[in-house]
Each structure stands twice: as C-alpha cells, then as structure tokens.
Length: 409
Ligand code: UDP
Image (cartoon, rainbow, N blue to C red; front, side, top):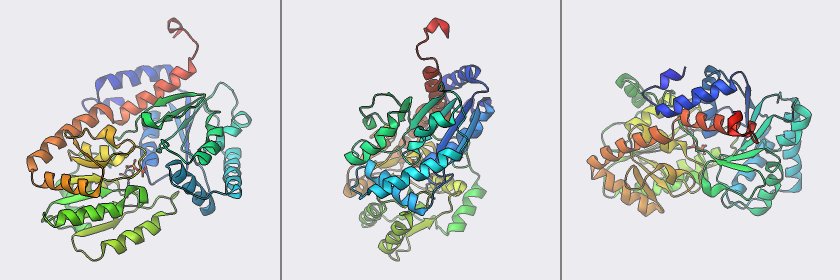
C-alpha cells in the first residue's frame, strides 16, 4: 500500500496519489510496449503495474510480439529518431505496419486509458476505434527516447500516428515537437523499494562481489548500460585508460541484451575486443533480471559514469544517485536534469572531461561523500516512482475532465 512509501517519498505526492485514486478507482489503465525486460521502460512498468493495482487502479501491461525482422526495423526507426542515418525502405515500413496491425487486432485494448510506449507500437492508434468500445477512452503516446533531432523523413512517418493520440508525454522539454495534440513533460523514475534500489546487507554485497570476482583493492568506476553505441562503452574504456595513467582503479562495464535490441551482441563483441586483457577491466554480461547484482555494483562503486552520446532519460543516473554515488554523465537527454553540475556530480562533454572529473573525485573522497548525499535527496524530491504515478494519474484525470469547470470536479 501507499503507506510503505511514507518517510521515503515526499508526503505531498502520496496525498495526491490517494486523492487521484479516489477519482479513478476501478478504472482500467493499459500499457503497451515491446519488451518485458531489458531497458528503462520495462524496468518502470515491472514496478508500476503492481503498485497501481495496489492503489485500486485496474492496471494491465501488454507486450507486443514481433520477429527479428520487425525488431531490426524498429531499432533502425529508434536510431533514426535519435538522429542516426538509417536506410529504412518502403518494404520495411510496410512490415512495421503489418506486425503492428496483427498485434493490435488480437490484443485486448479495452481500457479507460491506454498508454502506448515508444515508436514500436505507435501505429496501434489506427485500430483504436475498431478495438475500443468507447471513443471516450484516452490514448496517450508515451515517448521515452530522445527525439530532439530526428531524421526528418522517419519522424514524419511516425508523426502521422502520433497526431491521432489524445496527447503525447515526453521526458525532457527539448524533445517537444510541433504537434496538434497536447504534450506533457513527465520524467521517468526509480522505485526505492525495488530489488534494484532497496538497501542491501553486507552478506549480499559479499555474495555478488565473489560471484563476479571483483577484488575491492582499489577504487571502482562503474557504468551500467545496455550494450549500445549511444551509451558510448568504448568512450568509457578510453576514459578509464586516461585515468589509469594517474590513479590506480578498476572499471566495471555491466550490461545486458534487451529482447527488442538486436545490435547488442555486436557491440558487446566490440567492447570485449577493445578492452583486451586488462585484469582491472570487468565486462559483465548480465541476465536481464540481475536487479540485486546491479544494486550491489552501484553500491560498491566509488564513482558512476553514464557517458551516453544520446539518451532518453537515463534511469541509471537516478539509481546511482539514490545509492549516494556522484555521477559523471554526458550532456544529453535527461542526464542534465538529474545531475546538478558541481552539486550531485558533473556533466561532461568529452572523454578527457570525464577522465578529469573522475580523477577529481578519486583525489577528493570527501567530495564523493558530499555530492553523493546531495544526489540522494535530489532523487527523493524529483525522481521517485510515486512522483511519476502522481503525474500519470494527473494527466489522465485532466484529459478525462477536459472542458469541465473546476466547480464540477
Ligand atoms: N539495466 C539492467 N541490466 C543491465 C543494464 C541496464 O537491469 O545490464 C537496467 C538499469 O539498471 C536501468 C535500465 O535497465 O534500470 C536502463 O534504463 P536507462 O533509462 O538507463 O536506459 P535505456 O536502456 O532505457 O536506454
């Protein structure tokens, strides 16, 4: 129940959730995305759906199905929306639509509010009237990726679907687009009570350290990310190599492969080759449900990196800050919203900049501690799941009551 967050999450958020749930109790809230595990969207839905149910909302989560051809195409679309040139042929667009059509025709889409996450299932909106009982239902496109500078042609192909939703939700103001529908900015969030973020015992820490064979003899630099070019794993290794010339340390690059991300294996190979056989570099390929392991890695690290070149939000930043770790992150997507430069960590623009900031931390343990503590409070006030649930329910309530005067509510 909501009480479990008392004393952890801001009280105002809990009160608002309670009030909104009184208004929306028993109503159905469906989420559709393209993977049950791997990546930030699945991470949030895994926690949010059971919580919403506990709060009295009839929440459901459906995952669309596709074969490797479909996910190769949607990865290209994803990359192009984040600004990378990709060759997407007419046949590919047709297949994208066909798989969406097959999914939307067979999936139960009856719900008072339907949130369609990211571009993979965006064309579901075409089937709204066929599949939903009432036109009063609310359909929202929830975008988690960085669409600030997309390849124009690809955006136009997706935009024609987005325009038909009631509203769009983006994570960062600069991702907003000229759309004829309402746009809301809602940042993602972490659950402080999840396996990924809860407090852990020393025994659990020792178990994980032994399992991965990580000696705790020198400072640890960590980045946790899917193996993806936009997360810049090679840049992270280069950064470590500069730091290593001056400060002895270890680097852990921990990541998994997501079901809807076919490029991961290639990038992992590249990273393994690039890292060579340096005994102080640990490249860990983790199963997608390694929440406790990641929790421990984030806790044993001294400094955490998120050196992304493109980023939707970057949940790993808040996860690290919740564990009182300073974070050094690239100036992209939602990372600058989370890192208050010079207060909870540093924003960097280059490999050299990242190496400089890591060295600054390693040479100033007091600064690690101080910024780490600030980071935890910053996350508490801004990036906990209770705030995101509050925001989702608010948007739903506002759209459902559009046109009514305040006195009628
Ligand atoms: N994550 C994980 N295992 C991994 C790599 C990442 O569980 O090997 C989690 C990570 O802890 C975070 C999420 O996946 O909760 C990644 O979200 P983020 O927003 O940082 O990036 P995305 O993968 O969505 O681009």
